[in-house]
Image (cartoon, rainbow, N blue to C red; front, side, top):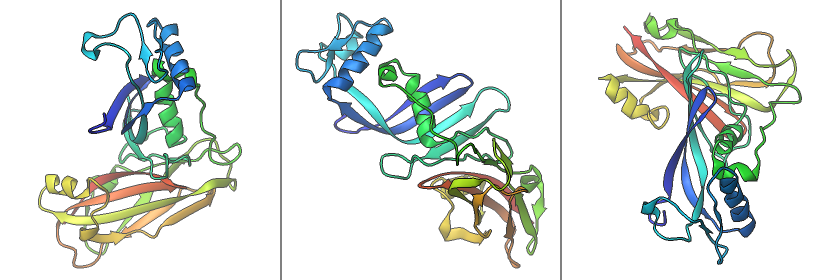
Length: 275
């Protein structure tokens, strides 16, 4: 851990599987260690803080752990991947971009499938943490929805966006499907921004994925829809329009979508063909 703190934790929460990625940080605060040890003891492993107060001890542990005391670590998450294992199925990735992890509402999107939205990155992380016996003692709570009594989620996109062969000069209409518990005209806090960006062309699908794995490939930017800012719940679903420039070469292109709220954002993408 001291050499390379990067780590991941995988947990199952009811109908979803969650993978958290981040950095391991050692826990040395005596109160936190006592709560964690009690949580393990309550779940069948008789752990307790050791005499130094900086680790834990127990009558037994896995042989590979060596003799006590054992250090305790927490994960400071940078990203989370959620896979739904029940209908309607799908997957979403979320990344914390604010200091200490974003606390604003995160609204996941998944091209060609609809994914129930996680209310926030912190809520997702806390839900995963609640599934770990070692963190149960700390207590967990869900983050509030967007605005008082309001939750607004967006998913994207219609199947024909990726199955249509597009041509230069055409307009790709991206209809954002909104869901959640909301009333038209209600305030959305913090405001959300919806973006769509087209990059390419790429010689192979592998080249496309490699170029865009860290976000839209700015070196191959072809077009972008005007950014949509949502500060109140609209009566109709927002529509982003990406215009394919005249003279665009045939080939495979990456159409990226993102939803941002406060300091946090989520994104997805699909492949479109220009003929």
